[in-house]
Image 1 (cartoon, helix red, strand yellow):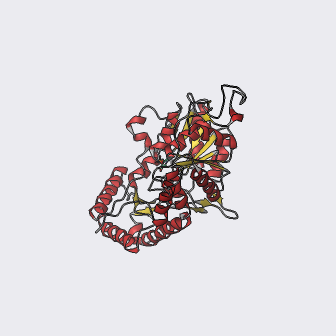
Image 2: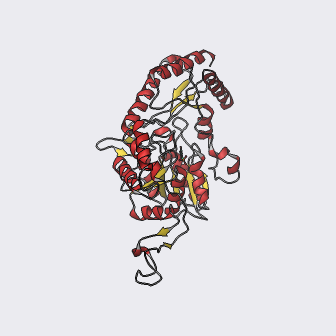
Image 3: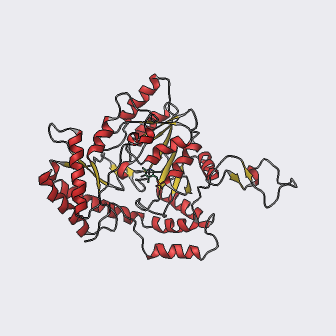
Amino acid sequence: MTTLPYGRQSIDEDDIEAVVSCLRDDFLTQGPRVVELEAALCATTGSAYAAVVSNGTAALHLASLALDVGPGDFGLTSPITFVASANAIRYTGATVGFVDVDPESGQITPETLDAALSQLQAGGRVPRVVVPVDLGGQPVALPEISARCRSQGTRVLHDAAHSLGASWGADPAHRVGDGRFADATILSFHPVKHITTGEGGAVLTPDPEIHSRVADLRSHGIHKRADEWQRHPDDPFVGGWYYEQSALGYNYRLPDINCALGISQLRKLTVFIELRRKWAQRYDDAFANSRFSSWMRPLQQRPGSHSSYHLYVIRVLPQPHESLHDVAARRKRLYEHLRAHQILSQVHYIPVHWQPDFHERGWLPAGGLPGAEQYYAGCLSLPLFPQMTDDDIERVIHAMTEFAPHA
Ligand SMILES: *Cc1c(COP(=O)(O)O)cnc(C)c1O
């Protein structure tokens, strides 16, 4: 029996051929495939601009800088996310704070955001940026979240590392990354995400100013175009070799080799998402049975949202009179039980404010983050990736069935 991971990339011969043909071409980096991938991302998401970068964390970092987040500022994010969402705020010298989540969805909501904002306001603080996260691939309530932010001058940096290809509403649907309700949106192309470039990420934005700052900062803050220089092109000290650094940037570029893979992967995004949704539906159907529903429940989906299912998350439910400690103990037994069947589930995520490096650093609302702690105690991500088979799904459902009586 093979080991079943919780997530896995799908690479086919077209992908391999795309990378090989790049290796035979002139540009391994800073070439035409960068531009081509960016255009394809705009076409897919409806974004006006896209800048690809070396990974999703770099995308968060550069987007934060481009949104003028810096020392003395304050940025809010979810505690139920990968540490990168919070670290990006810290990289800029700003202080990070956490907004509680709804334990049913693991996401921040307009209500939890309101609670955090009014507490901050009472202390005279207005966050520079809010970073909402589409946990598992389900879009957060972005229109409401962004309305609250915009009414007080707070920028919205949407962490869509899980939700490429997701949408909400209809006629027409709002696509994640279309830029209507966020100043910038970031994507990740890590192998477990919807499409991969090995490592990679992107910043999408509707704003040409933000785009050009991100594009500059990903390559040392260097300008190669004469109209952006302080010195005049006729100056004898200036010539074909000339460039100017006008801001402290980084080398966060994404090579053409990786872009070649990304272009080829993006062509298959619709198929990948259809498969993810199909497997998710299979789990949903099985778990709707009362044999399961007494002790576990899939992550709640908001009406009208169309998740692209980066993850399939279930929540182990507390039984009457049970503490969070009891729930966590049962979730751990379930994890071990699945592992004994060579099924590798995963926990997304350990609350970021529990990380030792965030102690005494992250701002928490008065009363703490009970929603996040409740969510964390019971959450578990079951295997979900496009190239799963019927047998794989049956294997997981069977192992879950076996566990149920001991729950
Ligand atoms: C994967 C991920 C990131 C960071 O992406 P990398 O490409 O691994 O740097 C950021 N936020 C979330 C929610 C993620 O899942």
